[in-house]
Length: 155
Image (cartoon, rainbow, N blue to C red; front, side):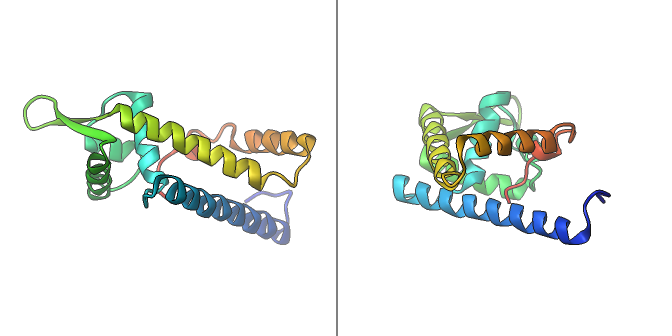
């Protein structure tokens, strides 16, 4: 546990971070639903982003990278294929690779734009100097976390 923080301060930081995360998640989900008319969550966009960054992956590799069960990944990939955002293509005997379509790439770009607009709105009460300080504090906290902060999960 962090030694320079007492329990009360740590509780306040924890509560504040959780509320901030929840606020962003709810607002982004609402913006996506209003803009795209779809009930697609952040998980779909994390899958698209991961495949675009790493190249085609098998569903099991993708599940491992994003730290979810293969059954969960299969359900998400079914939905992405329905939307025309991803394809499962043969890759040898009894194997498939997930690739992202141009429509999926466009959906991710739109999602990132929506997410940034929501973030700008949430950060509006901060001055530019405060926002820059907040960004620096986040970088300091995340630095050296051996990938844990960039790991998967669909929470």
